[in-house]
Image (cartoon, rainbow, N blue to C red; front, side, top):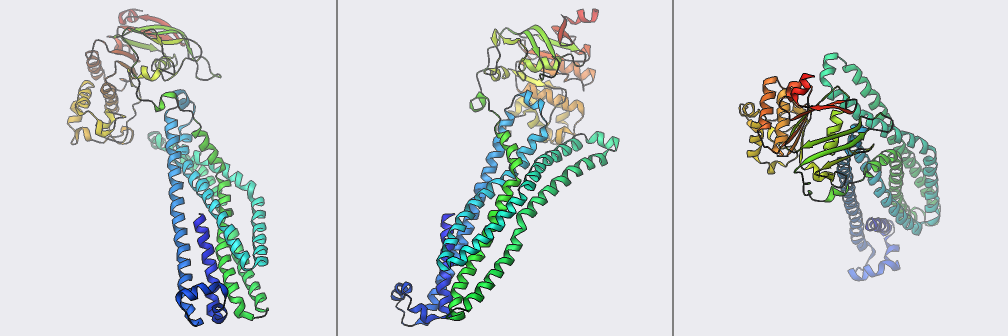
Length: 559
């Protein structure tokens, strides 16, 4: 930036002798400052100065252009590299947040922060700040150059233009802040409406509610675009008035200088230098103002981005995978209570339970009885916040060691998430494609009773499943989810109504396959169908957040 500013001074300074040699070469030839050049080149008459001064002026203009181009390239690279850092950092910090945080907030806010608002910080904050710094340096150096040429006129012009921009800033500041807040709010609403409309596309198509979602999206998007348009107009409109004022100023200056002794010939070099200075200065003043406007317009989005960047990282974030917690005997839950927020009722109340290693435990209960919440706590996704502890072989599971416990666990939820990638990548979910163990993938698929279906496909394990597995049936998605858990080779597998989409015969085949894996495999199953749990070691019935009874399948059926 500093180098570019000196290049601008060089180009403005070079126009004086260049225009002088065009209009009054004899005067330039005898000027003291030009004598060293005359001696070096061995010039004998004034007309010989035209070529070297033309070359110098052209060279100065080229250097100024090249430095401006270089500065644009460097500042652009810096700005977008900063944007990548912001976006990656937000995403990383978000992924490391506890499950309770993810449950409590809307994903649209996070997605918008990672994508749109991080981009907004690049375009509305980082780039404008660099432009503002650059413009400030350039304005200072150009003004100094113009002061050397004609101090009174330079100061008068700069003061006049500066006062106009300051007045505009004061008049538009409140409007810019209102639009900034609207942009931050409505950009989240746009993402939210897209997610809800596309995420529930089956219901939207069945209900014919496309117009409703179009209206919701349209209101948010129109408000967003209007605010963006307001900010863009406010940042650009002074330019046209300033260009007109600059032309008027040059005309008045030309008239005034022409009236002085020496007439037009004497005035042209000074006028040319001032005109070139004004031609550089006015766009830079506009850049500085537009940058300020952009920064003001991006304040709310910046605050939201900084909020996401302030998410704390857990201690284990930068550490290697921990050594698994010792699990050889039992999992104990003692006097466990939990609620999702201070404003809601307790979901679990004083739960006490012991789960022996190698056992198969079934959980039943009405909707809202706390089954899934209890298993979320067993998996280390939630922490008991109303008292009680989770122990593994007598060791309490806390924030500091919950990752060591989670290395034992594989989870199969009711709603399986499938990425828009191959079956192989979905079974080995979270593993880089180059590191997937193909033999283990095929073995897991066999155990999940889906290998025959996969082998019958033209591309077999390389078959793409579509977004969220849309190209597969519900039962096939469920079995891929089961295969994913088996691929992990964990010794604690948790099924949260994971077999609900399977027919009875397939469900029993899957359960028999799981039971035959290993004697020390601990399986926890939530199921609505009691028959799913007939081979369980124990069945735990929950009611209103409490353990109602614990018994064998025969005991539960008998009562």
